[in-house]
Image (cartoon, rainbow, N blue to C red):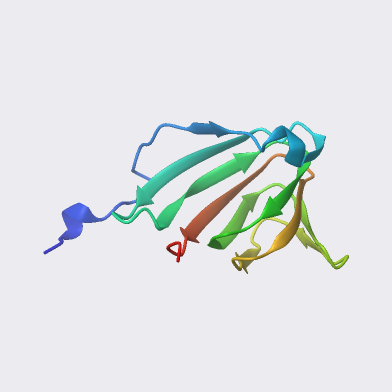
Amino acid sequence: MKSLNDWILLDKHTVSPTPLMPAPERIRAGTPSQTAWNHYSDPSQQFHVGFWACEPGCWAVHYTEHEYCQMLEGEAVIHDEQGGRLHLKPGAQFVIPAGFVGQWETLTPCRKLYVIFEPAAT
């Protein structure tokens, strides 16, 4: 049985940053260096919660996971393959469904809270 001792308070929980970078063939502009602070992953490694930051740049994305995000800082524009675009600013809350294909363009250094669910491979 779990207790309050098992809770993770994101503002008090310390984790090491993980540097990330899109694969070179996915980068469309800039140097979108990224950092993740993953605060929680469940035992199945399908559910994750943490913070993510990125420097300006643009790269191709193909989501295999479902991701809830809340933009905390900065601005980004998401482009879909049909020509649509969505301008995200601090306070924006959104869900990216698995199967989304497009481009993530970070306009200014940004930071977001993420909650990810990665369906098991079938």
